[in-house]
Length: 152
Image (cartoon, rainbow, N blue to C red):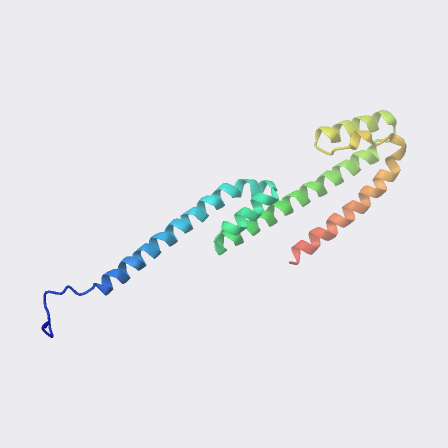
């Protein structure tokens, strides 16, 4: 018959098991977090270049703070692109108004192509007036978009 208090029996270390479980859980959480950070860093350059898949990957692996930073960076990039497009339109329209001969028009369109306005050289001189009217409409739309962004 066993004694009521058998001191030779080793009691299970419940607190040690709980501590080991919590330490393992914390270590797994750190590994997962580091993995997400590595994935975010991998996707970030593509996301900032406009790659939609990279943007989705970066958003999925970002912390809430990083998501806000990413959204701010993307908004600033859009603002810069909008400003650049607006400036290009203004410069091209001024040049187009100056170009009242086919030779001057050829110079203006060649210079616009060199500055990154694609398709400018394909516009014939006879369509200059229509293109100017179209550009004024685009300029108004860009101005409205810029104002809308300022009030957000």
